[in-house]
Image (cartoon, rainbow, N blue to C red; front, side, top):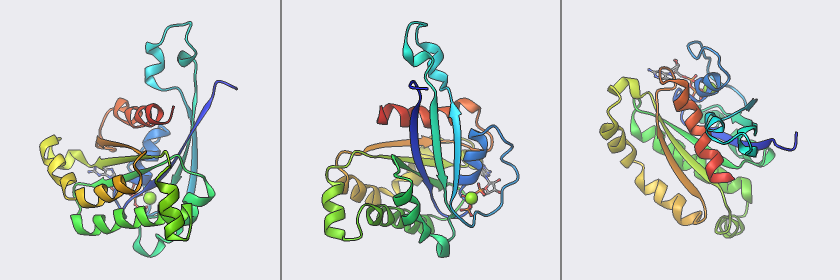
Length: 208
Ligand SMILES: Nc1nc2c(ncn2[C@@H]2O[C@H](COP(=O)(O)OP(=O)(O)OP(=O)(O)O)[C@@H](O)[C@H]2O)c(=O)[nH]1
Ligand SMILES: [Mg+2]
């Protein structure tokens, strides 16, 4: 239907951070049993965002459906080279980069740098051309800090954790001056569905 809109997202992050679990929650499945992702997996879900109900019955927004095209990726170091192809082939609107509060910072910082470089590669393999295009590109980066349950939902602690990634995020911001940056603190496993919906609400607001 004409009313529908697409949101194409690439989900990246170190292994075990909860990428596949997030998609399971989005699809209303039990996230408890996930296996390590070994290849790129395209997941689609047509959804009405919770905010739709706030719009009047005369407003299109009340009836609009969003096609979420989420590209799940393996976080394993050796399989990360698939990230570039995933982003190139599925013309992403943005990256949902996931972080895990219960895992060490350093390996995740490397994963974040990898996501940044593979994204640029997906724009153009020539670094100079890629940087040039990036300067004009409207895109979205959502940093999803997962496993809040492991730190008792302490947002201050979570913010301190995210501060460790500031130098990399600063590079993103300089390279993509027109990008929208969002941050989300969540427990994909335990947070209520509204928190999952909120991630996609933020994407909608950034893109439309
Ligand atoms: N405590 C806790 N565990 C979680 C949460 N979300 C996911 N997990 C667990 O983290 C583990 C890894 O989850 P996955 O979703 O498979 O991680 P992934 O990022 O897809 O991993 P790869 O496919 O290897 O890249 C699983 O045992 C999940 O149950 C959470 O919010 N809290
Ligand atoms: Mg996975």
